[in-house]
Length: 122
Image (tube, rainbow, N blue to C red; front, top):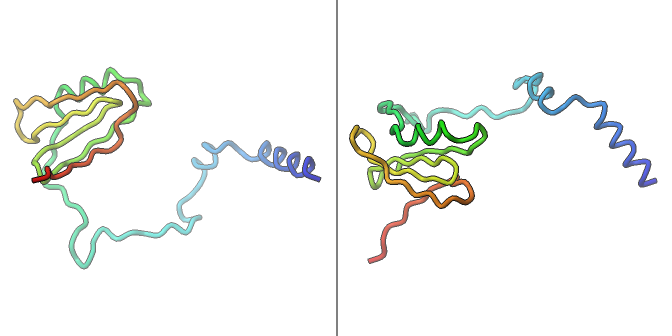
């Protein structure tokens, strides 16, 4: 009985189109996705203050990496810094200052996917 169920499951998987095809052919109105508001109590969740390019050092590193390299970026507002990670390298700089070169930390291991800031202990 168990081998019949496994055979049925395998046959079902063989007849279904590949996941990429299912995603490409899917439509969002076929799903019950919740639509999120861009405002909370009348205030925008996010707004664009200004656009800024990544520093040339970050862009150069990004161009040298393979296409599937994980890259992330963000703003550390409390300390007035921006950050970007390209694979295992972390870049931190002050945005809006053209001649400010980023500080680079590269541990050569797993990709950096998040950055957190801690207040120093007194």
